[in-house]
Length: 269
Image 1 (cartoon, one colour):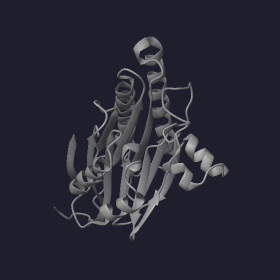
Image 2 (cartoon, helix red, strand yellow):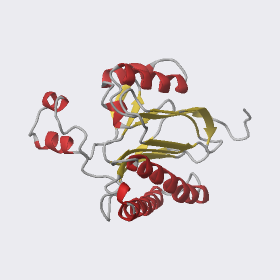
Image 3 (cartoon, helix red, strand yellow):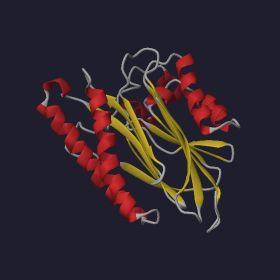
């Protein structure tokens, strides 16, 4: 499933944003439990990687994205691109709480959906900043001035082991616990959406992805692809193709957002 690149100016006097997205089941799994969405006019990007037996993962990720798109998207449309970051964060947590409760209750009500949950990574791109939130091991990267930076820190057993010095980065590559998340939507009554605010400059390129990409494509490969002088839809296609070429062991989802130059008030085009 591909979404064409979309260029939009959230405010005619500030940065223009271009978006593109792609999701693929990969080469091993029959179904796709990832869900992605973006609202160019709002500067909103959402990505969820579902988990659970039967079709629980698909249900959980789909619910998370649909509910957040409806609740937070509606709030953001009303508040506008100049909304205060603290208000944006409060609204994001409120939307996350609503989605978490709905997924948890659905799992309780339907035995086939018991234990379902989903990771989440999202970004609200404003005129001068981006607010990035995440739960689990779906990630957000930023390419700036030929430097690739990971803006999120996985909520996973593996990350906790690395932080504690229990294993080395080399051992982590072979760890059997790579996919065990310590935080997810729909598992417990309360879940915190970890959120951070980042400044934005013209030329910044943000990548939001599920672990089906980050587990299969090295940082060096990510950097090389993102740096290529091609359009965002072509970058998204190349990222997914590389993950599949490297094994495609999981569903693969990417959303790209690039900050373009400013547009003077009253300008056309």
